[in-house]
Each structure stands twice: as structure tokens, then as C-alpha cells.
Image (cartoon, rainbow, N blue to C red; front, top):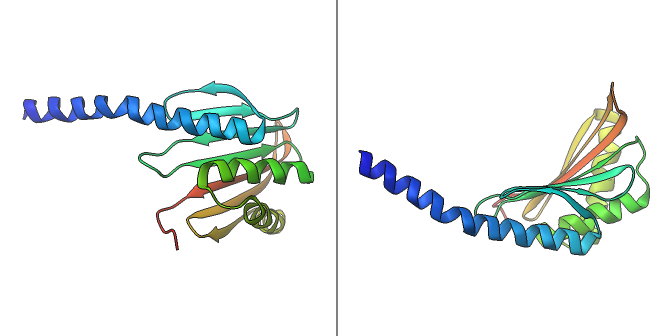
Length: 151
């Protein structure tokens, strides 16, 4: 039993550098495609600053399912928010930026009425939420989340 536990831990440890390398590649790709500055990063997560009212977050999945989110401080994001979000989504999923931007517009429009909305794309889901945070005011949150169904 102890040998099996040690073997499992060794396998996990051996995969961490590979996971960190994969995440590092995604972080670099998101930063390059969006122009956002990396604020924090770890082996499976990064946050970016993309302007005074906009941030990005990246969650690196293993082995291939990751997500990227864009947070806007306000109820009505400008078109630049959707452009940034689409570029970040493309960096993670490879899905065309126009497709991601259009899905984000639809999801955000529905979220303003229903608080949350999803739009499924081949291989990913765009999800948006609209909320009014007591300490931050109105927020718009959208994410592109990879999934294994690539149809």
C-alpha cells in the first residue's frame, strides 16, 4: 500500500512540471493575443490586468480543458471588452474571435435579464453573469470554458 501511494505521488510530481509548462504556454499566449499584463501566476492559474476596469483570469486544466474569464466593472461593457474577451478565448480554445464575441454578446444580453446565461460552441461554452456587488457595484463576468465535446 505504501509503495502504491509513493508511486502515485511520484507520478503526480512528475506531471507538475509538464502542467506548469502547459499553463505557462497558455499564459504567454493570452498575454500576447490580448496585450494584458500578467499580474499573478501559478502552475495552474493566472490573473491579468487589461485596463482600469477590466481583468482576465485563466484557469489551466489538465491535460487540456482550460477556461479564461473577463471581468468588467460596470453593467454595459464597451465593445473593447468583447474584443479582449474574444482574443483571450481564442488563445485558449482556438475558436474564431468573431464566434466568441458574438456568443458573449448574446450571453451577456440574456444575463442582464436573467442574471446568468450560457451559449454553447463546438468545444467550449461561453457563460456570462451580470451582478451588482455591494462593495464593487455593477459587474459583468464572462468566461470561455473548454469542454471535451468538440462537435
